[in-house]
Length: 280
Image (cartoon, rainbow, N blue to C red; front, side):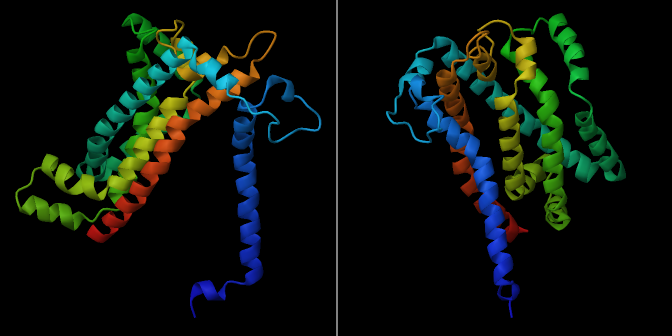
């Protein structure tokens, strides 16, 4: 008798109830944000609350898309997140391979030391980074933001890729080395194809962190030329009045570059994981 057939029907129903409740709790803020973004202003504070707008409008989206500051900030976020993701993966893969395969017994303590930097309160890094970026004249630049974000994404990506590499069979690498492959060729021809799911996951994580980062961008940029979208959204929160319509519309637009590519990459992620399992 299979394990699935031994599961009590009541336990299965309870699991579905918990899954349903979790889905509602997680999805409710996003659904409410989308619904509010297409409501006319006069329907924002009606009582009782209305889930669906009586007269849907695209006015808030048009106002956001006609705001040149938001479009520039969106472009800045795209550039910074893409560059941070590319550099994080390019440096994390060889670093993780060296720590897991080449450093021997010293690799694990070094890996823990790299990750432990993330356990400290972020506030202690803000002032040293500010002084450093000011000294090299990288304040109010996208390059400065890239360096600041890498301090967060690179240790995490190295840890995630290293965890994925630990599961790879050493026999494949040893066979390739016997055939005359160098360490670089082993990484390119053996490690990267098999470890692709872990590398893709690390890349997604780095992109999401860089895309939604707010504190670094708020502290290190004061000009529209370098501000990212999360910082610009702060200005929709006025001193005396909040522009809920544009704030909700901007939030939806800011969520799309993460939600849509992830929905596509997720299928490739599962496919790559299965291929890796067959090769392993």
